Length: 226
Ligand code: CA
Image 1 (cartoon, helix red, strand yellow):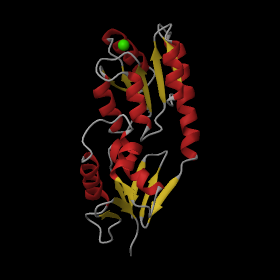
Image 2 (image 1 turned 45 degrees about the horizontal axis):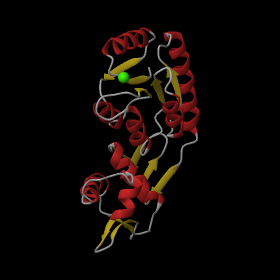
Image 3 (image 1 turned 120 degrees about the vertical axis):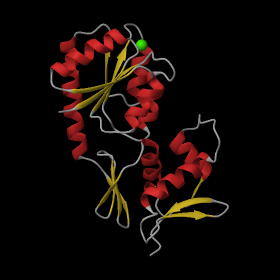
Image 4 (image 1 turned 60 degrees about the vertical axis):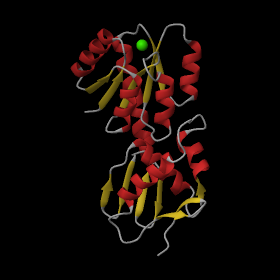
């Protein structure tokens, strides 16, 4: 059965939607704020996200923007009646659909069915990027090396995808920050080094052939030197 993540801070509404969806046979997990919703979405394993826009902490549009960096998870935005800009922005940012509050459960169920059907079609059109025996499936969000499946977080996945899209090209920390974290990112640039280390630990450390190389004074490159 499809697993749905519901991010909605109005607890009564969230409870109601959860019960109705479970009644239809869906598995449902809830988050009540943007940050925990984002964390849950990034751990993966969901088939669809129902995402409220007005959320405490990180709002729904920002959650959507961050999710879209790494994943094509179907997203239906839950919007207030007259928030036209939110709908437009949401769709521009890659939401699959939106539904205006208050909505009937039948309408929500119909939109969920459509979004899930579309994503099945999309999954069949996924792109496989690879380097040596490492491969990444963009739509299924799967990474394997040889016969082993590798579990990556959303950010690690986005980082690896960026390396694979630029295979053999040396990428600077600034390029990586801009592409993977977004130009609005205000934190430390050494976040790139930290994530490269996480990624190496998963894709290289237990393998003889190393694919992710440090170019001293410049940045990083993914290539098969063997
Ligand atoms: Ca809300």
